[in-house]
Length: 66
Figure 1: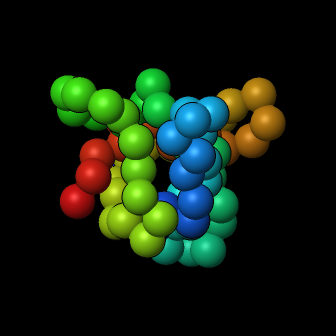
Figure 2 (figure 1 turned 135 degrees about the horizontal axis):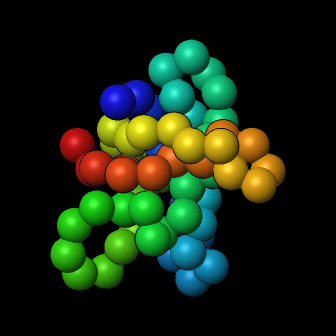
Figure 3 (figure 1 turned 90 degrees about the vertical axis):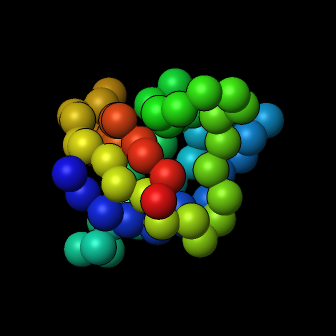
């Protein structure tokens, strides 16, 4: 599990980026957010996540809001 902070997230488009503790930006898609209801993230929000290799680099999966 990795820990990071939401850099930005566009709820209308359903994606954004998380900045990991090591400073790396990771792509985040709404479908990877765990939990019920509307799946969105807020700028500055702390999250934990797993990493997966996506089509364009590292991608966050199993995103959990802290």
